[in-house]
Length: 348
Image 1 (cartoon, one colour):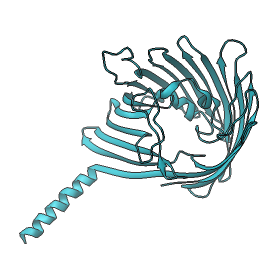
Image 2 (cartoon, rainbow, N blue to C red; image 1 turned 180 degrees about the vertical axis):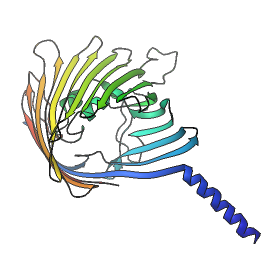
Image 3 (cartoon, rainbow, N blue to C red; image 1 turned 180 degrees about the horizontal axis):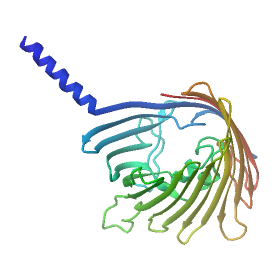
Image 4 (cartoon, rainbow, N blue to C red; image 1 turned 90 degrees about the vertical axis):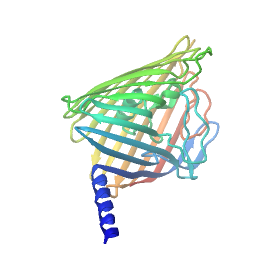
């Protein structure tokens, strides 16, 4: 009788704890056949993440009472075509080779949330990346990705930063949103490059009804060449279509400058969606500036809420010595390249 009472008490306590906290397993498996055509060499491959980035993750939240909550997010990139994990940067200075095992390279954070907003610690997207992916019809995935991401001079923190301290505004500010992020290279204090990999980035935006617009700025420090970047993006939802655009500028101190922009749209068609974009990126150098212009067209068909099939085709035109090639093909300077993707995406 006493053992039964103890067991009931344990179950009751466990139920109360589970009511206040939760853990979710989630992920995306996206398999893509990708073909690239270049003037030097073509490439045919089965790869991944042509529509959404393949990933495996765990996230959880605990209600602390009084409007406070704690949460965590661990998300690993997957190369489901060969079974390996993704790559990561330990110090915002170099990118490690592709790892054989699972690493939580996409996001690994712990947060404290409340009426004040959110304080987030760990590896995460940088503020300057959000405008590139949110205002890209292809979501910075696959052969249609904005040329700014393909050619960016933004360095190791173009997409994510490790060792980051972030703050997000609360979501009840009449459509205004924003974040600040400080990230560290974690070098010794007695070395010449002690500030390498340190950076500060800010993003502010406004989303209300059909309008969404945001501005981001960042600076990442390096001994030989600090990298400053800023971008502006926006979207307008007409109902029958969404139109979006972004502009990005990268400036390496005492080095090259890069500028890129995109204009595109999303058009719902029954159970699917047409995606199209024109993007360009130019690097300022001595003499004619290398420039790559890309046009991309794609279609996604949703078989269910979690499963979709898709196809994308793109062509890039290189000028003044640029040699951008699609889907890992190889093209000579000033020559063009083309490519296409088709695949299936399942989320859970």
